[in-house]
Image (cartoon, rainbow, N blue to C red; front, side, top):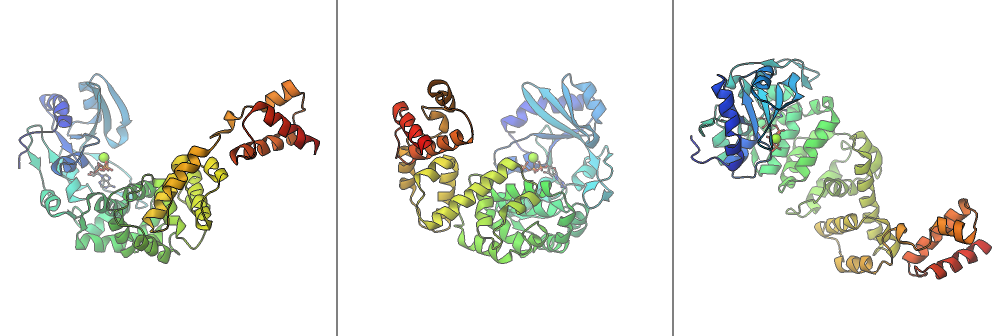
Length: 402
Ligand code: ATP
Ligand code: MG
């Protein structure tokens, strides 16, 4: 098959491919970008594979960065764009089921395509637009099938992360998992325990943020892969109920929202240790835990002014949207009104500060002052006290005299 017109992202990269070819090496567009072009999806990164060794690529281009030279990847900067050029390689021997112990650079495209995970990701395109399709990737793209390259069970044993990637691609493309591929994913699922959780998190996050996330998650559950994910093993019911209750067409706006939705159903209400076990960032943990707090407060009724003040507006809406997706009662207009009615959004807006109290009123700093300022903040937010200097000073003096 030959593409008659290449997308502009590829056109821009053509001089790079040609330069490599003129030097006597092969160069192809490979992987996700080829898949996405054939599907008419937007392309994020244009990845290039070449028979040239990293050192040879570096000699050809003026501006390069060693981003992963031990894996054969050199970043080339040209025309204001960045291109990852990776030497054809094989990854035969795997240690710990995790990472290839050694990457072997090879001069054959075929060898390089063979090591790729799924047929739809093992396509290459040359600078003339000719498609190299050694594993019927095009057919699988057309029929909407995720199929492992080669013997599925071997491929998942080599690198169990591919199991998560399989669910992820099923969700992002809304494809079907080919029977043997799915069977091998199920059999190999226990090997997920050997994979670095940060890598699993990335794939799982990508899965949750796709349009067909319910499909990917359903397969993950069907394959019993959840048994090998931290904190998920004892939560089968919660996972199924999450899947069942969430509106099918709901798209999460953030991965924190997706995780909060998930953990909200867990019977073990200890979300923090699970998020830690997944080695997520502190900021991420904070967002998920706050979303869960908001959800739990909303169960008891509408949020108070103080709650609206306490949490980021974005999180309040995300929690409300989750409720909507779960078919629970929602009140977006109440939330909007409460936020609009807040006298202040941040404590820096309070017209009297600790410094004012010390410098103008001669009040000694200390824990009591901190406490009184907290009371001022609460009183302003709840509308009991006006955010005016005189009123605040009177309030403070009264409290300090108590
Ligand atoms: P995305 O659009 O999400 O970036 P992608 O297909 O580009 O999808 P990447 O994770 O960026 O996925 O990987 C680029 C390519 O490298 C894949 O298309 C696939 O050919 C290959 N690849 C990546 N990870 C693996 C893996 N674990 N095993 C085998 N091949 C892989
Ligand atoms: Mg990619």
